[in-house]
Image (cartoon, rainbow, N blue to C red; front, side, top):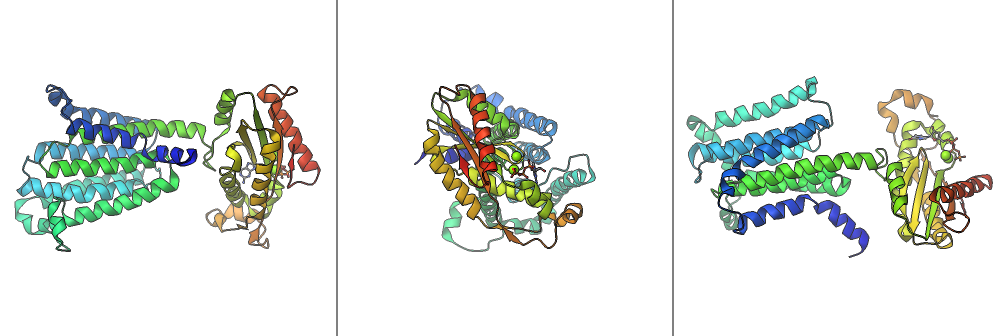
Length: 406
Ligand code: GH3
Ligand code: MG
Ligand code: MG
């Protein structure tokens, strides 16, 4: 596995996978002291409360809803579901195992709209409505309706081995697919957190169905949410919101770790102002995303950053400028060759569209100019290397653009 694949695998599994593995180990291996049994059932409340507080403070309502739902479900499981679920407890468990994954899959798509706005209140009301529905349906006189929660769609013998109802299995499976796709697609800390919270929820419900205490799984879910929130704020500080690439702050930190041989390239989109004027600002943003996606896959091990506006920086540690130029030529060509289809990005923003030229072609190209400089006797400090790369970029612009200058 190469370094990049390892980095991706790490970002998808850490720390959620590790936390859950610890929870499973604590449950399976007899390593906890007997007295821990008195404290552990209370810990999920504490950790989920911290997750709720942090999410409220960080304005991440989808995590707030998740923490609240998990606390309610945990309480229901601990207090109302007996060790051998039957009757009302069994109905509660079936309803929970159906609704919990569906709610998690829905929460991950929620746009931030605040919790005290009408939409935020409506979302709380929907959670409340589900709680009322579950309490109502678990009444003994409604047992016939509750039986639908265990509806058997197929009669495969293998399904007799699992305690989950078939609707719950389908709900968990669909949510698993949705959250995995979302996780791989975005690779953002909150998405990773939601994915591992779903897996914790599955194991928690599985434990409850088997009559075991699900406390450690809820504790793991709470910790996953807390860490995801902390990682999210770190991610936001170091990532550029528009392109998702590392931002100037990350560049400033990365240069502190550079050794003696490195090269810096400054990349600037050509005639970008004209592009904005022709196609509108939203299309300009699309171009920046497209250029960023190419830069993030720059060959030769370079690390790309959004430096500011339509300007990007690439650091090649342990590489001379001469070698980096070859990789940068590939990059320049890849960007110049890419067809850029002008989509109706301004549909929602009439103002932006009014500025765009309606007769502009739907398919176009963008080019970049690149200036390169390395650390040498003349340029020993990073500021000097960046300045030299900037001067090279200026020469690239002066001599016709769409070129790499060293
Ligand atoms: P040159 O080829 O010499 O680099 O010309 P240019 O037009 O690209 O350079 P100039 O510095 O004149 O214009 C840069 C433009 O980039 C101006 C600004 O509106 C635009 N810009 C900066 N940041 C963003 C952004 O985040 N989104 C969009 N759409 N435009 C941006
Ligand atoms: Mg430019
Ligand atoms: Mg510029």
